[in-house]
Amino acid sequence: MAVLDRVDLVIHGGTVVNADGRGEATVAVADGRIVAMLDPELPLPEHDRAIDARGRLVIPGGVDPHCHIGQRLGEYQALDDHRAASTAALWGGTTTVIDFAIPDPGQSPLDAVGERRKLAEISRCDSALHGCVVEWDDTTPGQIATMAGLGVRTIKLFTTYRDRVMAEPDVVLEVMRTLRSVGGIAYVHAEANHVIEDAQGLAAADGAADAGHHPMTRPELAELAAVTEVLATAEHVGAAVYFVHQTIKEAVDLVRAARRRGVRAYTETCPHYLSLDESAYAGTHPERFVCCPPLRAASSVASLRARALVGDVDTLGSDHCCYSTSQKLQHADDVREMPNGLPGVETRLPVGFTELVVRGGMPVERFVAMFATNPARLNGLSTKGVVAVGADADLVVLDPAERRTVTVSGLHMATDYTPYEGAELTGWPTFVVSAGRVVLDGDGFDDPGPVGRALDADPIPEYLLT
Ligand SMILES: [Zn+2]
Image (tube, rainbow, N blue to C red; front, top):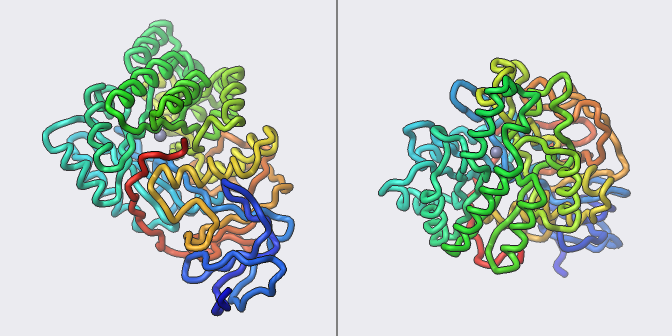
């Protein structure tokens, strides 16, 4: 092989794990890219910096497909911005975050994309964006095409939150059909609104709409009903569909069955749906666990985890959202008014690694697929999610034997709590390399400044992850 010029960084002695296999290799990095994967027996090329990864794993930097950064929802403004969220992401081994451009009332989807792209200029890591369509009019197909031209090919659709962001079934259908023509995918939050409104109304009539009763206001059947309908719509129009945050095995199984019929349907779940259950709502801070869908019964969590362990879950997204305890407590007695969502961009790796790899025995390769490779592919990010020559030098070095106890004071997300306080977790990055820069090492975080790039999604291939 050709002799390498001096490189910026070498990572040597570690076991490189990709979604499709592992091996010992020296990773050489120059100009933000991986330029060589070398036989570990060879002398190191000349370099500016070396990371000794002996006894450690070297995996692709995480791609978090589901982050709500500084989300505004009615009167509530999430507490982070792109600087804070990307900093926390890097601390947790995620080097690409994908945010949502959810239009404010009266704002067009395209304008929302423009606004979010501007907000992302302060990001410390690379970022991409999902669009969002709520209503359909004559301009919508053109807007979707324009967004695709801008590198935004995934469109979020909500089947719930009437009068805020809910898209009617015919809007879901039209968006899917249009996305098919631009190489895009619909990202669907699937909970049947009529079931939820009914359950919420019944709970409220019983004086039981507080955070402690959150699960009964959003039953599992609501998820099952919406996934069934949305899958049928996707199959009808021949479009791809990605379900965000699936929480029950029945929903995962529907997606798998559709895949076997040739439907391009995909399942995401979140670390909290694999590791926490509804007993959290009986604790002293039920509001801190209010997310939608809610945490499920322990038996449901166990069967979801079992599906993940056999490879039926494609991606792990954080559904990161930074509201504080006091914001959530402004309407403590009514979850319909409470801002929902959990902080999680920083803990996605350790929670997922601990639950799936350490406790569940999942091969690290499969975990890497869920954590980085599949989210990259399903978002048209061809330079992400893999440790290979030509890929962006986004790398995590972690010690699979190191355990740490989680405390909110040891984390960097812009809120006052973590759902994992006191948990002992494995899977913390020792080193994080983002676009070729070492941003985290034994000395802590080295802020790279606002260097994150806005990534453009390529058309997503017709046949993917079959
Ligand atoms: Zn979300």
